Each structure stands twice: as C-alpha cells, then as structure tokens.
Amino acid sequence: MTLFNNQNPVDSLYHNIHSVYAPLLLKNLKWGINTKMQTLLTELDHGLSKSLRHSIDKNQENISLIVTFNDEYLYWSEEE
Image 1 (spheres, rainbow, N blue to C red):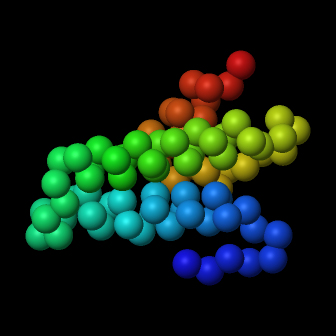
Image 2: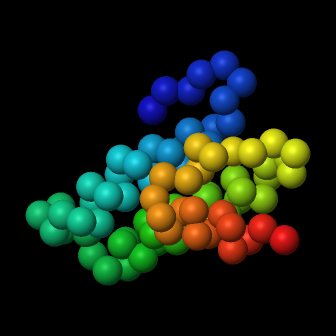
Image 3: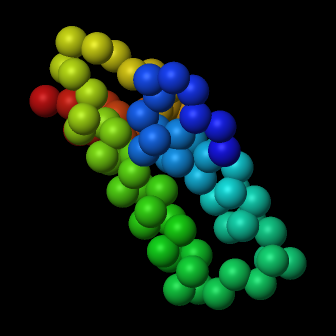
C-alpha cells in the first residue's frame, strides 16, 4: 500500500480493500476465508466507504469512491 503526499490514509485503505483484497478474498474460495471473516471484511469495506462519503466537503465531488454500480447507488441514495 502506497501513501502519497496529502493522501488520506482512510482513502488509501478503502481503495486497497475495495479494489484488491475484498474481491480477491471474497470471490475465491481457495483462500479458506470463513463466513465471519467474509462478513467482517464486507462491513469494513462498507464502513470505510460510508466514512469517506460523509467526510467529503459538500462542494467537492469525490467520484473516486464510485467504482461499481453499487457504489454509485450508495453515493446517490445518501445525497440529500
């Protein structure tokens, strides 16, 4: 995991989990991840995403959080 100048560590952690580790660990049964660990990983991914969406300045769009259709749905469903 690489952190660049002025990069939010939560943002970096979210993108690594969401884009690399969660898909790899949740979709491939050969890694032997039990149901509890799958649930925890999914909750961590969702929690980090929600935290980042709520920490964004309302005048600043952060479309980097939208990677999948589900991400876009969550983004727009929380807009007021």
